[in-house]
Image (cartoon, rainbow, N blue to C red):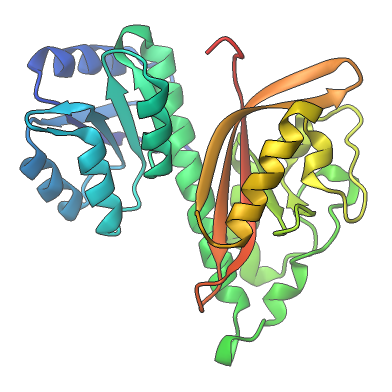
Length: 289
């Protein structure tokens, strides 16, 4: 169910950009937005601490510092709300650094329109909700003394027919609801790349003949050219050296047909801080972007 109104904060030292973003959000057809604006680094940190907004837009240029500096400090302070970077022109280096620091998305001002802006906000909120649900599910699974409770028996269950989340107990109701409702494809994957659970959206990418088998590797879904780099990313996550990877990847949905998707691979750690599982999220994308 969509929120009646989504509160957005823009951090930008250019009033013209504020007016542009406000005009675009006012034209959104499917969602109402309330946009606030601050122009300085210090005001932005105060706003983060107040936690009164659902989504944050950060401009790359902020006086003598950058939006990346602000993004890094926000994440270090434990701010988990979706943060979308904005810049005047595209830069692959800035894009990758923003994603590594925990940005939900990266948009070039001159290339966005009302639909793209609304879509970016929606996807950022869905990813944040999915990540929170996964975190809560893992916390519920840990019984007294760090053991696995009855709710944890679902982890590792084969996904029958390639849709939904099988075998979750009542304690996993919120997690199952997010899996079922989000438009993003979501999968829980072992550190060795074995698919454990997927939602209907994830399975839907590979319809009409989803190829789920017990113990299937996530790498098998990828185009051959993407298998090696993704395998290295799993190894890095498994060692706990990084918590997140984002990239555009190619998937073989059926013979001769390729799906391009923006993928997010986020590491789940246990109470001792050790790598335990990976959440993979897919969003179909245009290979030209």
